[in-house]
Length: 258
Image (cartoon, rainbow, N blue to C red; front, side):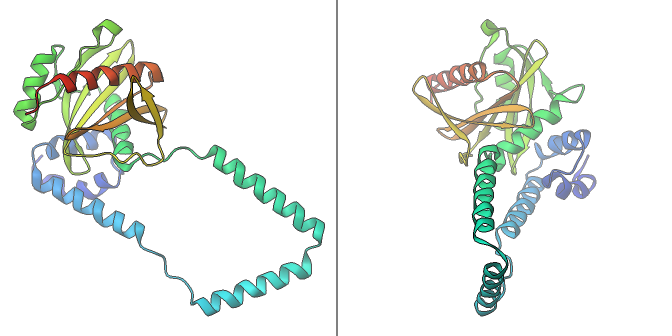
C-alpha cells in the first residue's frame, strides 16, 4: 500500500482501533515510510496533549458555596452512627480499590504488548522467517541500519522464528519472535528510546534492574540500556522471561559499541 492508500488508516492505527490485519499492513508501511511515521507520532502527541489538559472548572467562589451547602445538608440528615459507618465503608472501598488496581504500564510498553497479541493471531507473524541468528542480524542491519542482538535460546528449548520491523510511537523497532512449544515470546528493541517505568513492578535479577507489568494475559519485562530500550513479552513465567532478558543483556553488553 502506498501513502495515499494508508493515510485513512493512520489515525485509527494511532488510536488502537484497527483490526489485526490492518495493523500488520500499516506496520509494514511505516517501517519503510518516515513521513507516515511522523504523522502517526504527531497524532499521538496531539491526543496526549488533549488528555493532559485540565477540564474547565467552576469559579472558586461557586465551588465553595456548593461545598458548604453539601456539608450543611449532610450534618442535618446524617446521624453520628451513620457518618461513622459511611466513613468506614469508604475507607474499605478505597483500600480495596488500591489492592485491586493493576500496575500502570508505560504507553510504549502497552503498545508492544498489543503488537505481540496482534501478531500472534495471524498466520505469518514474522516478516522475515529465519532460524539462524546471524542471518536475522544481517537482515535487521540492512533494514534498520543498527545492530540488533539476536540471542540463542535453544538451550532453554526456545527457538527463533524470525523477525519484522514494527512501528512503535513513530519509531521503527526490531521485533524478534521466538517459540517454546506453542507459547510465543516477542523480543522488541526500540533504538533511541527510553522506557519510563511508570508504575511497573521493579525487579532485580543477577544485579540488573528490570520492570514488569501484566497486561492482556501477557507478562512484559522491559528495561532501557545504552541507546535503546528492550521488551520481552510472553505468557511464559517470570523466571523464564528474566533468564531470557539476562541473556540478551549480557550479549549486548559484550558487543562492541557501534
